[in-house]
Amino acid sequence: MAELATIARPYAEALFKASASDLDAAAVWIEALNEIAKNPQLLQFADNPNVTAAQVFELMTGVAQVALPERSKNFLRMLIENGRLSALPEIAAQFRVMKNNRGGSSDAVVYSAFAIDSAALVELAATLEKRFARKLNVSVQLQPELIGGIQVVVGDEVLDFSVKARLEQMKVALTA
Image 1 (cartoon, rainbow, N blue to C red):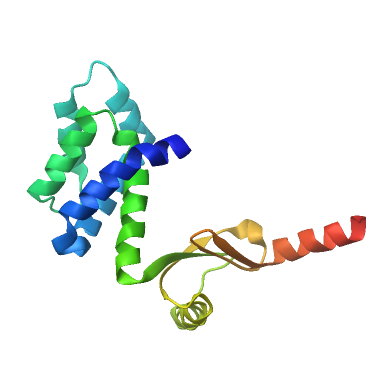
Image 2: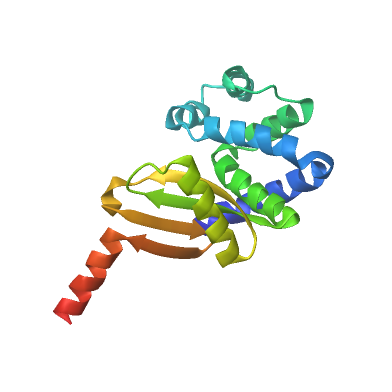
């Protein structure tokens, strides 16, 4: 995975510098392209030696759900022609980190066994922002295997308040 991060870094940095005047607009289209590039069937299609770069480009721009500015189309063409389409998710992730760093915020993913209502999520976000001392872009992902509670991931920090984690702690304590 480190190799993919190494490949993606120059692309993400170039995109960040080129889009410095309007990072929010660039974030919208890079995320849209990222969602498309995560599709395994698309990657298989792109890797087919009988398929041209133009065909891959037309397919991706055809399914994009947002209007793609010329800059994004040029960026996409370059990735496809250089055979770096599989690096697009990592490029998008590194771009998001650079954008967040400039704005003084971070992404936070809350894994929960159950859906969290909006009022509880607002309260949780405020608590987490105090804990991490920065603005957080909070998203929620359901993980029923947690049994109950939540797990919060901010960058490389993990806070685990799940029932599953507590059961594992009890198991270790009882078998020690």
